[in-house]
Length: 161
Picture 1 (cartoon, helix red, strand yellow):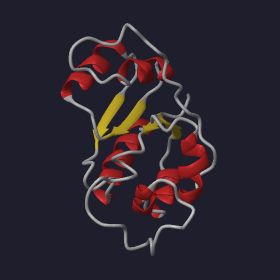
Picture 2 (cartoon, helix red, strand yellow; picture 1 turned 120 degrees about the vertical axis):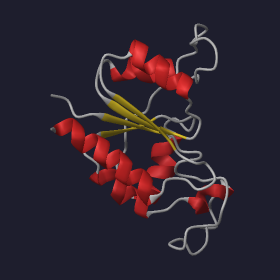
Picture 3 (cartoon, helix red, strand yellow; picture 1 turned 90 degrees about the horizontal axis):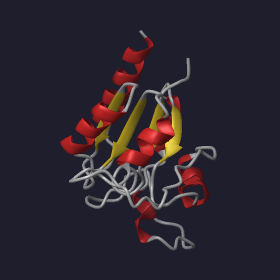
């Protein structure tokens, strides 16, 4: 059986938009072109890698996530969802990523970590995805917290039973 996937957004979950720079980060390196990179918590890499799933970037950073984000988190290169130019996006208030992630998962169970998830996305995934799915919304002002990692870990380990 294939391991579940974890689709990971960057802006919001890993780079929070509010609050302060994590205490683990002294100051941003001088070569950073993106001023919010200082908000990355290097400890998140270890926590993500420990989850019983296959990590996949699901972000508009595309492969830049492998070049810029992964090294700062101590993660290896990860697969990247390549967003199609789809004229036939899901109707209504369903997020533009939803259809692409369900297609990418191809029936595998998955966790989707993003700051823009709604009940419309959950309903669409339930109706169109054969596997189990956890759509986990992260507060973009705070990013991923210990409680988020616990909820994700608990859901993933429940799949193994």
